[in-house]
Length: 401
Image: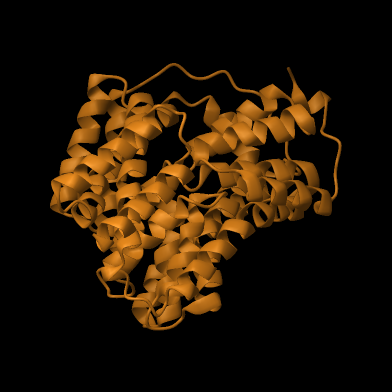
């Protein structure tokens, strides 16, 4: 179907904001669950777009680095009410969890989390959540031997050299191997729908993405400044991580823990808390920004980190929309993406070993609890928020015994 023959009815920015805010308050369960919430609200209930257009936007967001569910919201909001609609969709979907995690950071700022029992429980919950992500992503993204091999090599490489720069190299190497070994037939393309088909505007957004990706590290090297370092670290995390959600964890850990901006205990406690709130997992950045030391921190640090990690999503979505049809027709692009996704599975598996596993599992009982939590998640009948809360309660009870 040529969607250009059926352009979407334009809506208002406030309308988009209201619907997105509802989703931001109720969308528990992570990126995959978010797609279900979005489809029910935007396709079935609101009829802002049909099933085919929704699937096309989902495919686009899965191919781009960054938070896929947030990018999908931005794309739908942009389609409905232009660029301001995309911004409104992001604000509504992101604000509830960002506020909750910032408040959590501020409320625990004077607490010694290294001795808190409930924090140990949150770490166990995080082990189960990340293990589930590795399992589900591995089944989808590494279904054959070549991709399993890429994932294994990526995991070993990251265990040997767990640095942000090396992670980028592993991702690029996975893409190169995919381009060489995983060629596929071109995918049938659909006509994209968006607020603008102007390829010049799209090229400008992509150019801005690349300039910031290259320029921020150079600027930080020339002008040592804490705020600039924070923007550089979080922008790089948002712009280079394929798979979204849990995959951003190792890059953020490497960016903020070794420099001493935040302790490992506080990092893992915040990650566990992020499982208990609705909305995108990338709002974990708000918790980190509010907890950083030295300054910026507090509300200002949260806003800085949050804006930096999500900025690439806007630039990539608005830049890719006019070129999406051509990308979908490229078998080389699809092959490189297969390799990139396989390397992402390996990177996340390495993060499950360290820092997640090594930071949380200290006794056979904790291993048993983490396994029980993982089994509960794999059944699909127990929401992550329930698992995290129960794990926190278990940790607190264990500390009192």
